[in-house]
Image 1: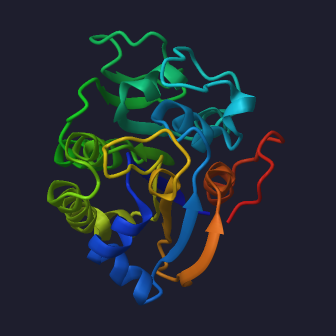
Image 2: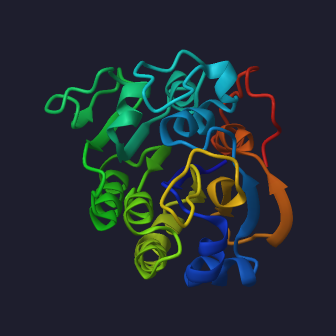
Length: 268
């Protein structure tokens, strides 16, 4: 059993993660981490995939089928399962995560920073800006870990999405942002590992060279899943393709929390 940090990098493509995230690549190459390819669920949009990742069920079942669906989650999810098990949750994320698991609609003052054990995201730091700096997201997550030692923390950096939508995925800016996220992870990696966290790195969706996502092409669907355990023992590049639906049960298994029957996929 370990604590878990899920880094859900918005619009992080599989191929760009492989080619431009050298620290993650080192961990995979030396078998200190395990790499899978995810062919993402559809539609390859943000809010639907936040819910899919955290419920382990497809959009047609959980009903968050578009970014415009504004309501709380109605299905068993990671945050709910962790809180019901008496453990602690946290998130640094775009405000749609707050709307899914805390309050909907988002109240931009009251809901921005929360520390309330009655909520599903008990320690939350939320923002409404699409270009919120990844440095600030990582710093806020690192501080939450030091202050509250949450059992499950969602870290949701958004600048890959903003940069990809602004410049396209086949751009210097998009690739440089992947390098920046890799460096930021390296900066906090040792501390988080020593604190006993399993770190999982994935994307909610990819993005194409036009700066669009939502469709079915590999550029819009294929994202990485890297799993780094505190003992530093990994399988390297497995060459296996898995699903977004594997993530929620994989998190709960590592937390030794009961997996809801609605999550049909096996944990990794």
